[in-house]
Figure 1 (tube, rainbow, N blue to C red):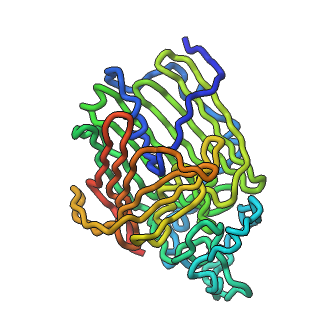
Figure 2 (cartoon, helix red, strand yellow):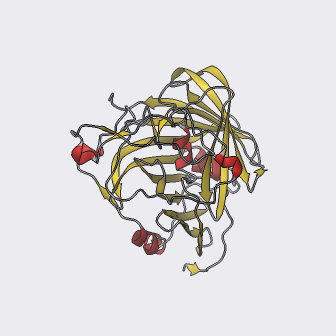
Figure 3 (cartoon, one colour):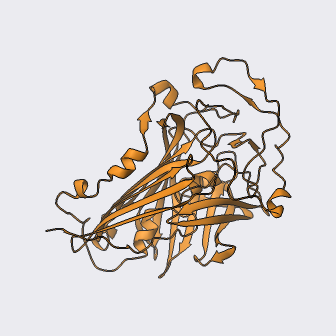
Length: 380
């Protein structure tokens, strides 16, 4: 018998931009379990009709779904741009910031993928990278000059805890989709525990997030959790036309009780969600000494993530040897940095910027995830 309750569930605040659900699961490790939780009619119980009514995600024709524009050419899509013109009112500090090296470059684009053969036309005015807090180097408008993402790319990382292999995590880019009529990236990640570690805590989680191809802002995400102690479905939608963020969470715990939670808040333009943030970091030009800042909206909080590029380092992994840049992210709320522990990320020092190593300190010990396979996707 499943008991349904409506109450505020404990918040799962982001640990920097380490978005891998296995790391979060290990932080709550306790009882010995041998498999994921089972509950009768769980799929129907966890269904979220409000989310489904707010977002329409459709498949594109195969040819269009497989194609991006690695050159980074600025692309004008049909329909209105999904970002409000201004929020909040720019401060004097914001107005004085440079918009990046590309602020004076002309816009070159095309009406849509349906008019790909049209002759590009220069814009009458320069395309400035927004928002002001972000670094604009390497961008034309909101798009990176060199698109780091390829449909079919996939990085598989092996996660260890106290020196014991706990499971595999993947980050991949799947075929483009259409979200409310706009072509969008489709980013997907998974976290699966090994059979040995599942004797202590079983994890079979995955997430997906859709990001607008032109503006690089997310529309939605879905987190699907199957673990020893919980079944959970979390959804989020960013309604850019209204400047509102929506978040829903449904959970069945080990006692077969149902917890439900819903949040809605004001959404700053150009905000990332907790899952799109790690992908978005790859779009910036990364070199030692730089601090990359961007907004993240999550669970009724509007945060600023600052990722400091500490150094270059050559490392060896099961997937091979790589030249990397080492990133240390921090989270800021209302001008104050939030303690999230030490987190370090190693990204390949090239145009693709694959995440190939993560170290994250949790309550007990440190989780280390290292790439064991890198599939770069087809050449452009």
